[in-house]
Image (cartoon, rainbow, N blue to C red; front, side, top):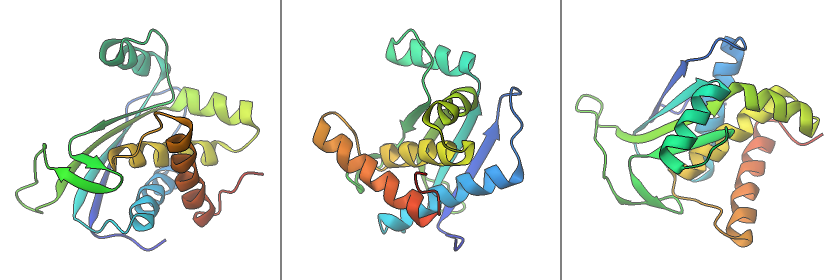
Amino acid sequence: MNNNSNVEIIIQNMQDKLGITKEIENLLRNAVEACLEYECFSIPCEISILLVDDKEIFELNNRLRGIDSPTDVLSFPIVEMKNGTIISTLGDMDPDSKSILMGDIVISIETAYKQAEEYGHTFEREIAFLTTHGVFHLLGYDHDDSKSEEAMIGRQEAVLEKLGLNRE
């Protein structure tokens, strides 16, 4: 994967349940870059990925969404976007790099691992799937109905295929 110099990807491992290797971090970076390339999004930006455990994502899901259970991925956009187009920059811009702060993606490593086993594919595929899901939310895509869900999953699958992470 070509390194997209227009995106700064900050990965913070905030859990100690499962080890996160440099290969996994590189996979997450490649997944973000592939999503932006898929959307032809070339505006300089910054995206943060926080890797947490089920307890932490449960607390976030409960406090911010009123849902009393853990989840796999949450996205917190700073920029208002709709279907890959910026509507307004609600957030900040880095004064040095002039990059738009796109937002945060929070992934439960525990849930990703469980789902990989449940769905019968690799942890790498699952973590990349969740990363692409988060990125497409930051880009203003949603899955409010079956049509938009199908379109969003189609985008994710196209990116995963480009990364060589097809369904087995």
